Each structure stands twice: as C-alpha cells, then as structure tokens.
Amino acid sequence: MENVIQRPKSLRLQSKIIRTIFHLTYYIFHKNSYFCTMSTETKEETFTLEEILTSLKTVHRLILWNDDINTFDHVIYCMMKYLDYNESQAEKIAWKVHNDGKCPVLEGSFTEMEVYRKILQQEGLTVSVD
Image 1 (tube, one colour):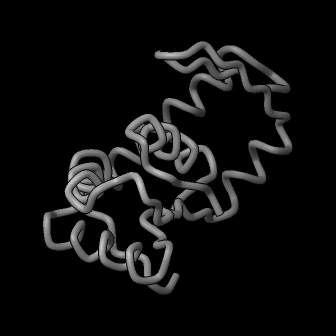
Image 2: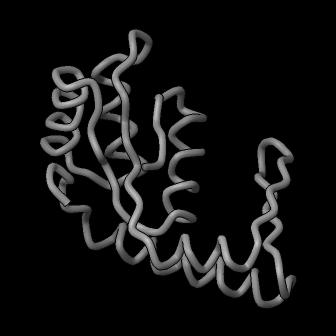
Image 3: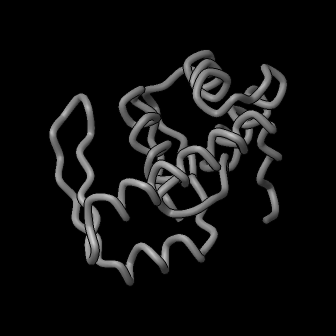
C-alpha cells in the first residue's frame, strides 16, 4: 500500500500473537460466532463465522486523522508506544496527518486493526479502520 510506513519486526510478531490468540479463543469458545469483551469497559460484539473469515482474508488499514485536540508530542508518543515506531517515523506520521488530514499507520487483518483502533481511541486519537 502506498504511504504506509513499514512497521517494525517486533510489531509483526505481536500481530502473529494477536491472530493466534484470536483463533484459539474462537475455536475454544464458539462454533458459529465470536464473543469479545474489552477490559476497561464491558462491550459485547458478536461476529458470524463468515464475517470473521472475510476480515482475516482482507487487508485493512488503520487511519489516523487530524484533529484540533491532540498535540504533535502526544501523537508521536502514541505512535512510538503502541505501534513501535521510532521517533523519526512517528514524527513523519504526525506531519503527514497535519498536512494531509490523515495517514495510514498500520495494515493487517480487520481484527488486528480493531485492537489497535480501540487502544489509540482510548488515548484520545481519532482513528478509523479502512
């Protein structure tokens, strides 16, 4: 994909771990649907098997949007802490968001992007999955 900064190897390993946990949870607890509970807020989401398989086959992008609330320092901090970018990469992302209004920051399965979307939203960033 164009304009997506290559994510570090340690994040790729985290992605594989997340996918493995997802698959184990699905097969252990459900046959036709997936039940997900978030830790800080209790939120139930149900997905059909078809939705899960479709989301695993398709590459999705996590988009970071410009807003008038977050500072450059906060965006850089979050990119480094949660997405494992170095300071230079995180600064480039912050500038791209500032100048273009948005920037794809991560690629992967829908489930993986949803995990990171929720984390970054809890930090106050404006993000969506494309």
